[in-house]
Length: 308
Image (cartoon, rainbow, N blue to C red; front, side, top):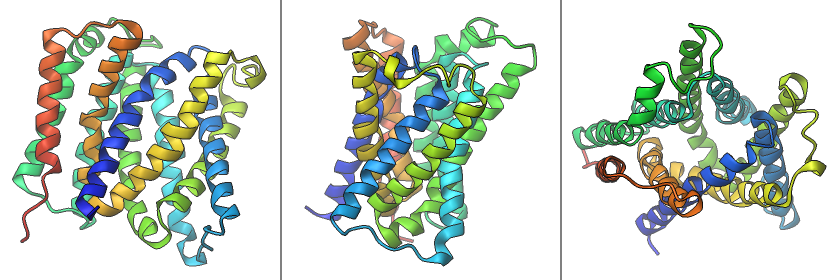
């Protein structure tokens, strides 16, 4: 299998798994506070992944010179992304949260990738990102309209939803910057060791923050979780974190941030289709149109840039 086929397979795997995490995540958040869920999920995934690498003697020794970049990448990809996202989501309707997060992230990946000379800005690629964002807006239009009309929010005063939306946008920027800065580390150490290390350190940081500051986190003991909650949590740990996050980091190495970030236009389609199966959520013509537009955006974004 050549490099292009490997990258395409990883891309489809990331789209499928991160699209599939929306259903178990939606279910588990009914019982587990969000920061606690992220902290336990990522710290466990990181521990399992690093432990497996260590037992096989495949855990590289990090260079001291790379420690500052590693800490910055962990802070951006894990701590900054999820703390800002979950804080902002308290005050913004869920549909608008998804749009803000998924729409700004590919744009930020494109601009940051070009700024760091990891990607080239081409008209087809820029058009692809714009078309994909337009598809997201069409798909989530009712949620956006409801939020702008003052329905479906979470209260907290007139200015708080604006601050919440800003935090969600900052979380997307944090994730994009962390993705771009992680690429040299992935080339140096490989995706699995970097994935395990960032998840373990970032997850532990989120877990400590949850227990210290998150309402209800100290009372949401894992021993009280139901079997379905445990099953969903294990899926998030094994497939949504270990497999998908490691595949995403490898995709960053092979493709760069812009093309790898096109999963944001495909994973919502997977989520919608799974929502149809799990919750019998209907697919209306507007949703179908939005998904077709997103597929077109993904196609344009994924096309390799012509050589200069």
